[in-house]
Image (cartoon, rainbow, N blue to C red; front, side, top):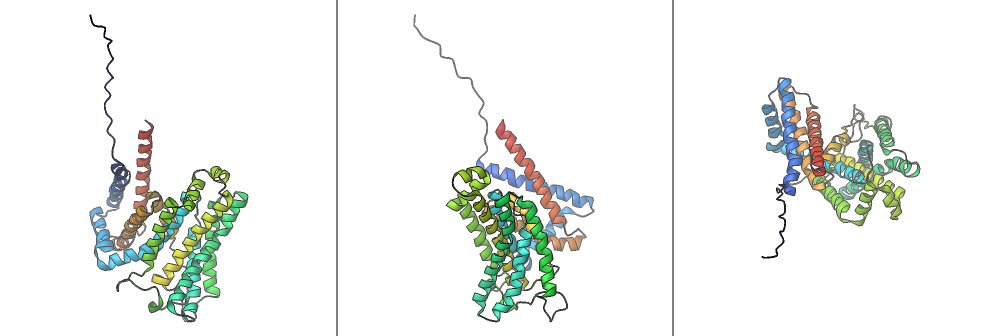
Length: 358
């Protein structure tokens, strides 16, 4: 009789299928976009327009046509730099919603200073100083909300929005009162001649601001993910008390974040004026900042993803303007589409979190 002990067999558990990280990213990004396109198409159908024809016009005019593609790439320049500015602040746990004011004052600074410098020195140093001045003014305009946040804990959203409203009125008033071009019937700054603006790329309508904008986005991405300063910014966003106890100087660090973000906002305006615009009108306010906010969240604060989303949004903007004219669709329908994307993205994120919690 053998003395053996029965070893209980392990209960067979069904293996749970787990998607690869790439499939997870695609499922959380592409699926919401496809659903948003379908939902927006249903809205178009309810308005009496053909969704397929609308999307066809958007792709044709914003991507396939040479002039449309150039307009799309040129349109990306300020959006990319503003997106980089918001990545800096959002990943640091701070909301720089005064970005539009910083952008406008950067544009105004370039419009006021650029023609003067171009008349006093060679083009290259004049443009470099013009762009730098716009960045400095944008950073300084972000300083009051930054100081109020650091000194008194004042919500930077409220103070930033107030500063943005002041900047809108201030820029308009300065152009009408002191910076108006005397040879123009419209209230606008002096015009920078086309041959004195940022050089174009290969004889196209795209200026080198696109290279600068891409460099800014990639530089910010590397700074936030690969440097000690970026680590401090991220720790500030995750846990401000931990940043303070670690000796990072919480209030001073918060001021640095908001001022850096503001400087990039001013840089975006100065590059835009020194390249595509050439002048600034008193009533001009494209509100790019609020348009970029959802793109930054769609990109999940990733610089590489931001480039793709800004490109897609620019195609929608340029192609959508042509499609709206041809099909009698409101010009702001692009924002409706972006809103649908955000809704479905939030639902996908919610489902992912619930699945992880099981």
